[in-house]
Length: 372
Image 1 (cartoon, one colour):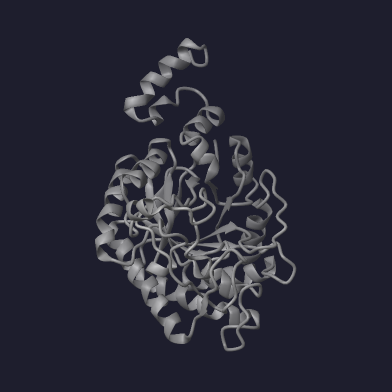
Image 2 (image 1 turned 45 degrees about the vertical axis):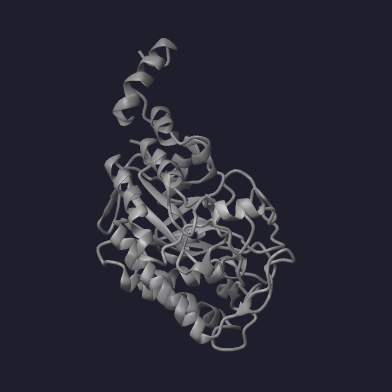
């Protein structure tokens, strides 16, 4: 029996297998609205057999976008395009999730494949280009090429918290099965958590307890606004990979608090600040997920350069994680779960493919002698 292809339930959401799509920014929205690109990008993962598809970091306020081309959920008009995507995912057997986010001092950045603000005036009109002053725990840049942020006062923090709550309610209106609180990768909540970015001297800075105070207030408000019968996940950077930054011990303490509030799973990533020394390699973040799972007593998702089906299977069988999340590997092979099912389970697995494809893939494999 394959662990990867066993079902698992979080509150009212049952997943048909344990391989999910992690949020991946597409930088393809205008004014925060999802369009056909997002439908096709996310929909293909449902066709490919993933059990849960989590939409990209979706900004809860306009200035919370990483770039001008990010998705948003700060306006009721943004609900319907997302609802269309949710309907498609459900129709093809996948649960639908969305990551709610605020970029903090990493906002108003260039689109990554451009690397700088190279848009012509004509392109700016076509792409709905915008630039703005970011906000952050402290008035310190992410790095030299980023804009200088304004330090948040309590009124600004209250406004953003309200934005998170309103976006959570809009996610429910769009029909999502789960939400993920983005608390990783050097974005706003991670900025409050990390001494690398949080230089405050008030009740929100200094000690670990103080640095967790506002992120936990946001987490609590979001969980209260989200239906009790639906799960809430949180994505965290378990370590900054920088001396003096967030440690595994800090993240275990944070995960324990999130569990107490009512978060059902911790999605364990890492890093997000300039100067990190990341030991990149296959499965490099799995030990972080395992540490949080063991020490915080909460289900976790492992993510990061997990590419081979047998590796994913062993992670789950060894109880190092409860879900395996793919991002770039899913881009490379949107049918990864269907291929993994053939490799791990074998036999006639073609019924798991969409009707429009399964019979044709079976015939192709028969012709090649892969299946008889």
